[in-house]
Image (cartoon, rainbow, N blue to C red; front, top):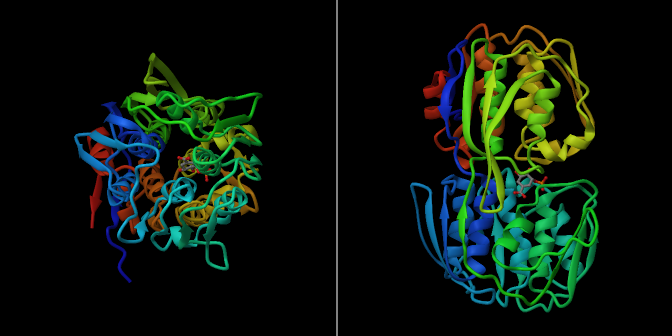
Length: 438
Ligand code: S3P
């Protein structure tokens, strides 16, 4: 079986300098969706030119939206209006992207034409009833496989009605899916979340001039039948991509790196809180607001980390950063315990199992539990060959582990790094982590 591309990472080193990691994935997806549905021309700067966001972009092109770019992060979207999408000539392939598939399910449920959503092997095995169930209760006609996975077949022409929906899991994708369907529903759709999750959908809807109410804490509502007005969007650097460098710089002695223009939305900064609780040396500067999203430069210097019990309230706020946080925990003094994070088992891979397996191969004691993991921190990593399971964040986390490894680390099947961080190897190299691609 092919393992290529394999990242062969040299041990040791430190991270230094100033870098800007690519644009935020969540915001880039939403910029295409809302830009397409808006009246007028939307210009996006700092767009993430990764495979996931390109899947979203190509889906809207297939539905008749004229989109220029991306070129150096610039995208121009000639919006067709909330009711202007056209039937695509083929199934819409969402690749590896759960965000594309789940948000599009809501949006497409309100169209007049039929669509079918498919994806790669990983995406086709992820749970989709969490989005199809609420949208069905709004009056949509759609189906999944018997096991609740894609393909999702959506029949057009349904008249949706508003619902009051309590999210069974803290998921921004499900919240966003219901709100997107709510744009096409009769009445006011409200979603209640059990814990705060990323709020880019709400922020960006307001940026496009669409009213979003929050009648009480944890509740957001949209009234169907409104319109969006084109705008200009400046996408900050993705804190989820910055997180690899935050962890790498923390664990590699002598590191001092500054990550520029990083999105600091409070629903995304759990990784900073967790690393700080572990004793990381992180300082923020140049704090400002850009296009409705807070941004800052983040300076990280190496520090002796200590193991902690990760507060459960921080789990949804750091949901994508746990593979990297586990690498930090492996270099911390003492035990780190994560609970309340069963969602990690249904990400691009089963991130609890896959990280535990890889950490063990590299000589770290890591015991998976049903809803988390227990990691005994130590003196770093040995050397060895680990599997990324086609998961971009697993691949990049183990690459950072090499900074504290005693020998070469080989990471198999790293193609999907391109889904969120196409220039990872180059930026890592520039900062002091040497990765060879075989
Ligand atoms: C995302 C929400 C999160 C996150 C994903 C992006 C989004 O998923 O893991 O990478 O853009 O809304 P869940 O909603 O499943 O937690």
